[in-house]
Length: 284
View (cartoon, one colour):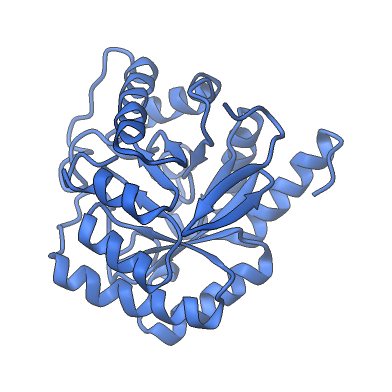
């Protein structure tokens, strides 16, 4: 079990990688329909440039996705996802060979190809539930795996999300998926409550307050709050206007135990981490 303040130690394709949490994961989308317009990368050259900026600003992980999971989005086929994401990861690994790259996919074959291209982490919105081969594939790849909670699918998840007790149900689901991943042989695991993935605004804030309960599962905790509806509905902002709200919620997530902040805006998130560490008397 990871205790507060302990380093994260992961085996990434046979290489030991140590991170001192909290850390920042930068979002790189190779999709044309990401809900944040500025995060849409139209070419491999733009992806490489954006990743370089994120790493310079202090990102510990760069998460590359080729299939939008915004509410109401239509699924792309595997061939299109591969076309978008594999050349980007190859280029990033060539340009930044020491960078920890993550692939954001629920498909086992895309995950395998991405790791072969240079990714060192798999971030799965479905926790292996959308592709029954995913857990077995990741176990053979030897990389960390992020399990996220989602009710429904990206196309349907926001139509009528309902829970009797959202926090208890998310904790139970992630606990079950952790056990399944461990049984499959995956050594290094991360959990993500899935803010905005089949949740109302009220559900999201219940989960934010409840992050300490998720910490009890004993693995690193990822919070993906960046520019989401739970900010914009409260403040009357658009995703493009939601940087300040994102920073506030990122700070709350840190106070409640988040180990990884997944964000569009790396510099501001890194600054939040530095101030959070200073408030605890820790050096960044």
